[in-house]
Length: 152
Image (cartoon, rainbow, N blue to C red; front, side):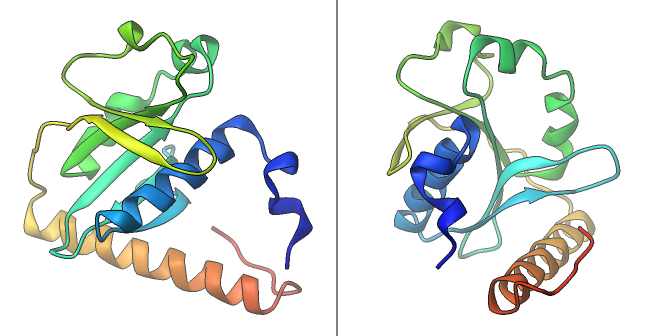
């Protein structure tokens, strides 16, 4: 077991991502963290649903973290739904109304506002599902073989 992934050793955004991933499983979604949909973008959590739905969740641990994020609108074209994940202390009035909202902690999360659905084109969906599968496979290989060097 990796000791560096205990809640005491994780950054605030990682704690939110962990809670989001746990909650997504409850909705029959699987997820990966830190996936790169295209050069220059890295999403915090990508969820893949049972029918191929692609959700992107950006985890924000503070007002400053949110205000320094100038790339989030670039994620919209890579998912069917977009969400912010924040903790209960986050000033949610800062978040755009036309995006999804998830309240999270290190152990669970709850969808407060469903992000509007904008279905991906079939070709883009195929690309995203392939990226998800490769990313998940690399992560599994690294977990099995910690000495394995990978490039994300």
